[in-house]
Length: 138
Image 1: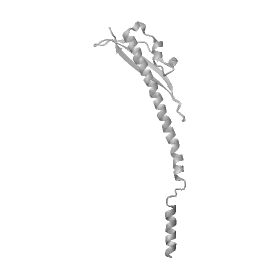
Image 2: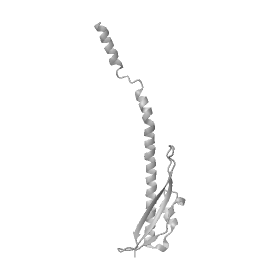
Image 3: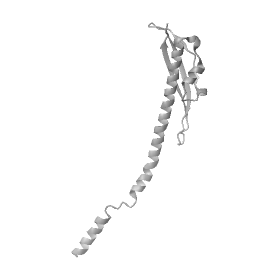
Image 4: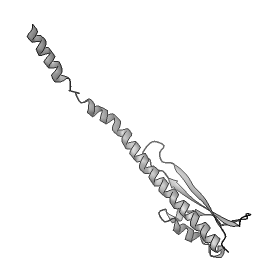
């Protein structure tokens, strides 16, 4: 009788670490969430990079206008937004803003961005824009 108790206990100890594929099932449940999270991080990085390009182009446009508004060119500002498709970059005219500390020019640049998220409702568009201003140099 005592021998059967030891054999039964040995069976319990031997099978205690056997998960029966539970780790594989858990991985299969978590993997889609991890992939979506990874794609969202990549898409955020792409949008952030595009916003940096728009901001840089607006700053360069304001700089061009502040140095000499007669030489301001929308095409030159579009070229400054180089990582983006320059044909889609919209550049506003420089606006002269009077100020007590010195007049400055303001330039607005915008860019339509298409999100490419492989989920239902993930293909949406948004408009990235930036306005920069620089004091007129005399």
